[in-house]
Length: 429
Image (cartoon, rainbow, N blue to C red; front, side, top):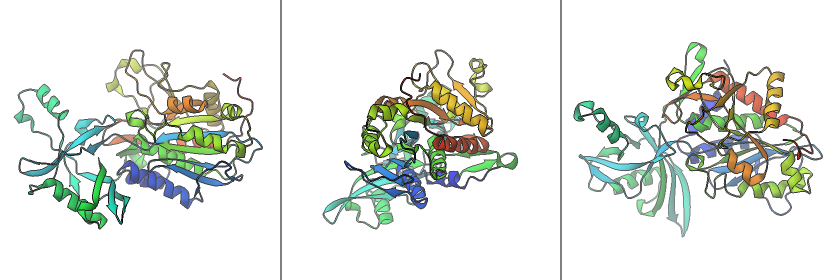
């Protein structure tokens, strides 16, 4: 079985999207990538390793291509994940306990978050020394817990289900005179600032139990935030394998995919299109349309592994299984992007590297998931394909995948980034 040091460290960093993104950027910096700010005439050199950030949870990183015309081979994924978040103005004394209420973010399977010791982590904005300051926070001793109600206290199962989907009271201590002041004092102590200096908080409730390998030879992996920290880790590992690619090997990490991608730091914003316009001349292109026409993009997000409990509708060959290889994701309504050219390239590379591939497609009429692919494809005009590795229990607090699929995914994505570019693809497809 392959080593998973970077993946497990990445999953362990996913206390919040802020912490996850910082971890990814630090790993790239250790691999020789330097942070830049692009102007009208960026000085980029072949083989140069660059990072451009937009805010705290969105960035692009790339290795400048060595070809005379070096189109982009792009991988993308998202930094957010299903979770609970602290609702503002919700502190209360609840049955003799200090509590606050939680917001459901990104469609978590709510019941799986009950009765867990949840770590409070995220971003704190404070006003100090005459200016606003932002700091990450994740106090080890500040935990919150959403308790389920014993079945004996409900008349019916439906009543119990409705209760689980209602107000989520997150208990963090025994009752104090002012629960909000008590909470702020715990946050402030961690940051060594005065509680009154805190003006805003974006705090997430995450499960910090370490990823667990199990099964023979540790073939299976359970963890919080496989969706989509595993894809982020895959991209970074693949990019770090690029020494002197002919094409410009690039990855992009974007915020708010789980809630629609439409935000200033999301895939629907102008960050990537504007950045590509600025680097096009350094990639040997005067014509931006030709630049994007020659470029290729794979959007990486986890896929559904399908079991017997999912019904007979997945009886055809589009139902991925764990440990059977990475997944090409398809969907006619446009929620997934499809490029015959990219699929053909992936199949060719998979054959070269002895990597099995699977396909996923929803049955007709089913509610479909999506990805950030359509937003980036529309904004950039780059042909795009959805891709991922299969997991069980997507959006649960403990998702499950296979070690082999991740390792094969890294190999295939590294091969894609390092693949020789093709020019004049404008008329293809």
